[in-house]
Amino acid sequence: MHKKGVWYGVLAYLLWGFFPAYWKQLEGVPAIQLLGHRVVWSFLLLMAVVLWTRRRGELGAELTARTVRIYLLAAVLIAVNWLTYVWAVNAGFIVETSLGYFINPLLSMLLGVFILRERLRAAQWIPIVVAAVGVTYLTRAYGRLPWIALTLALSFALYGLVKKVAPLGALFGLTLETGLLFLPAVLYLGAAEAAGSGAFVHAGPRATAFLAGAGVVTTIPLVMFASAARRIPLVLLGILQYIAPSVQFLLGVFVYQEPFDSARLVGFTIVWLALVLFGVENYLAGRTPTVPVAEMGEG
Image (cartoon, rainbow, N blue to C red; front, side):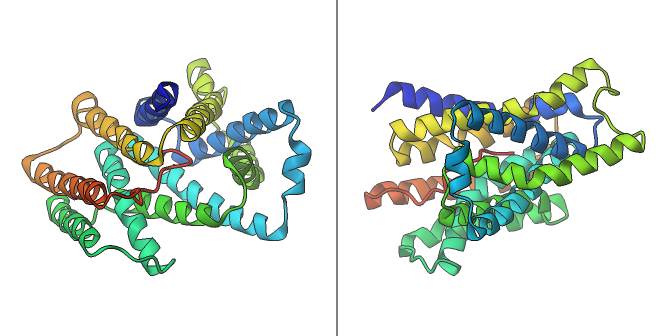
């Protein structure tokens, strides 16, 4: 096994796990503006990489009407995911965002069954049922449906489903996705600036630096992930993905002091049990887990 690949994977998921700490530095900026800046700066940085590697012609050659349609859908889904995530983090729901990424693999399995007509082994239904029990219990504990977690899980699972049939690699795919969102993002940020509510520059040099850095924090873990994916087995990469929601959960409870009573602990424990059963079943079956490894990363 390639040790460098393992470290790339660990670092990528650790960075994704610490994302809440980054967005917390921009707590006073509206979530829609955070999304706009993440799209704009990510696209500019990714396009610079494409130009620097002299692959613009290669990207242009792969742009067909079908490809654009696929990535437009992917762009909408990832925009919903990013917007929900940054809003939830700064509204004090980091723990619930971690729940979304814990249940994401199991939800992806269900999409595979009902949309792609994939077949599950009988034992694979057990963790899905257990996770459903956990979410139901948490609904009672929260006094509401955990919509933040479910929105994150569903949008990212659907995003993974779209990416399954998408023809481009990680660099070109993300460049096209952010490119399709670039003009709407620029128009929105321009309108916010004209209305006097824009945060860029006006919120101070520190906030401005963090807004401009949104592109960097998006692309660096993605590059690390891509490097890891080429070097280590998918099984290991699938296991490593749980680093990110675990770190998010610990940040929410111990750093940002979000409420986490015994009832929520019971609900989370049921979900964690589902994940353990999921991993054990796949190990015993002696085959690669159907864990949807996040090409984009969380949040």
